[in-house]
Each structure stands twice: as structure tokens, then as C-alpha cells.
Length: 404
Image (tube, rainbow, N blue to C red; front, side, top):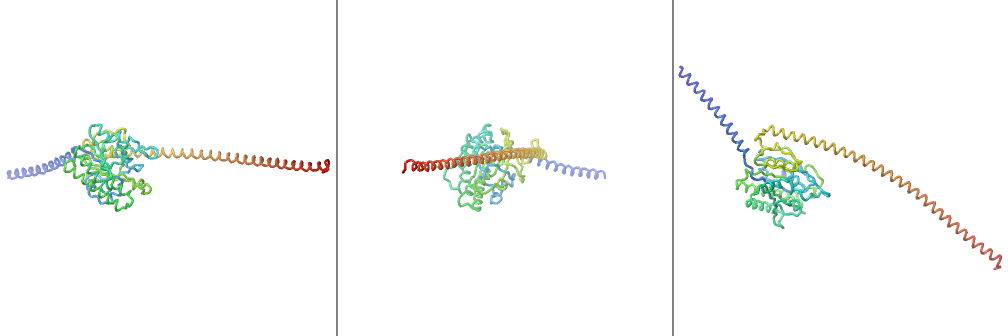
């Protein structure tokens, strides 16, 4: 009897041990997987810019490769900048600053040479390169940075392919830490004479195919999991003659994936100037001067001392501060507007007073002119009367004294 009870107790202990052991193994396995995801080494950074593409465009087109990256990483949208030019967009994207402009919305020549993310990576010994279509308007913007250009006279339908082929070639040769690609095919198609919405969407599909080619190359080299990839667009609707500025046209796609980032999430809207501070944090560089953008803490993977709650708290704290700053700026602008209106009213009042004085002076001048003309007419009449009198007197005296 005692033997049966002892056997039953041993059996129960064995079952409990199996259950607890299984739970412990599952926890350890989950923690191991989490640590493995967290410790992926970041080896390369890619910025892929689809020129002239808004979030609305991306939703309307067939882009399986970009959609696949978005589904596996972070998909969201970001408000762009003014003026709506690619140059201004690049300044905001790579420096985290609102672009500084001179008269006529001309970007300063040294915008990316100092303080941009690729420039700082270069200075820290991690090479950076840009691949684009070779337009001259980029010459001043990229001065001081490594840049490769595709050959001239390339068909619009093949321009994105040429950029990606050159990027793959240079990456295979040099393996730079940072690579920026500007794909202009969609924008060039939109600006062409025979442009239609369908042709623009087809051009965007061609750009998607080239993005897929680059991603396949990274996978073939075993570097995809170690690459931080940012895909976005630059809205240039006004420059393309698409009408008035609207917030919808200036909302840009923002897709990010790579080590240190969350996976499979739909992110709330951000700003394009928030990208550089976020990537700078992940690659370990400090943007100087301090950027206008904020770190997208809600994009980051928890770990390394940060819990999910801490990340969200930091994001909410910074957004609250930014909101207060925005309200303060609105108040300041309203105060300046009121001051300008007061000054304008004062100037208008002085202008009216000056106009009244001018009118009074003009009336006085007119009266004096009338008097002067009257005096002139009186003088002329007097001279005429005197002249006629002299003539009459002459004839009378001649007849009286000369008898003829």
C-alpha cells in the first residue's frame, strides 16, 4: 500500500518537473530568439529615394517588392518639406533639418557637405556613396561627398535600372557602409509631355522591380539581414505643375527595416526630418548641429536597457515637447502677425495723411496756377487795350495836326 502511494507521488513529481521544464525551455528559447534578433549586426545602410512619389502614389501602384519590405518592417508615412524640390528633401532627409533657403528658394551650396548623416559617417571612417542620374543641380548639393553618376542620354524607361545596376556594381566592388540611391524614373515620366496617370504608375512599377533587384543582390551576398534599409519618396508636385500644395500630395512613404527596428508594424505618421536622428542613433553617430527632427523611439526594438514602455514614454515625451514648441511658435507668429498688421495700419494711415497733404498742396497749386493765368490774361488784355488806344490816338492826332 505504501509502495503504491510512494509510486504515485513520484509520478506526480515527474509530471510537474516535465511541465516546468517545458515552460522554462520555451521561455529560454523565446528569450534566445529575442536576443538573436536584437544582436543582429548592422553592416550597411541603404537610403532608396523614389523621386516624385507620394504615399498616395505608392498605394495606387502595383509594387510587390516595396510592399513586401513594408510588411516585414515598418510601414508609415512622413510629412515632407517646403520648397517641394528634391534638393530640399535630401537636406531634410539626411540632416534632419528643415532646409535653409536663400532668395528664390535656392538651397545653400554646402547643405550636405557638413553635418549630414553620410558626411558624419565618412568622418568616422565608414564610407558613404550616392548614386544618381547625374543632373547638374545636384553638383553643389553633393560637393565633398562621394558620388557616382549614370551615363548621359539614357531613356526615361531605363534610368532607374541604370541607377540600380551602377549601385550594385559599386557595392560589389567597394561595399560602402552607407549608400544612397535616387531613382528619378517616376518623376521624369510625370513631367514628360505625354504623361498620364497610367504611365506614371507603370514607371513606379518599374522602380519597384529595380528595388527588388537590389534586395535580391543583398540576399545573395548574405547581407540583407544586416542592412538597414530606408525607402521613401520626394514629392515635387508643384514643380511638376500639378497644382496647389496639399497635405495629401506632400505625405511621403516611409518604409524602414533592419537591425534594431521593429518588424511588421504600421507606424503613425512622422516627419521626414525624423529619419536622420533615428538612423544616427542606430549607427552610433551624433548629428551636429542638433537636428530639428526627433528620434522615432516607437520604431526601435526593445532591448539594451530599453523596454517597450520606456521607448513609448520617450516618444510621447518628445512629441509633447514638440507640440508645446509648435504652439509657442504659433503664438509667436500670431504675435508677429498682429504687430505687422499694426505697423501696416500705421503705414497706411501715414500714407493716407501724406496723400491728403499732397492733394491739398495740389489744390493750392491749381489755385495759384489759375490766379497766375488770370493775371497773364489780364496783362495781355491790358496790353491789347493800350496798344489799340495808342493806334487810335495816333490816327486821330495825325489827322488833326498833319491834315492827311
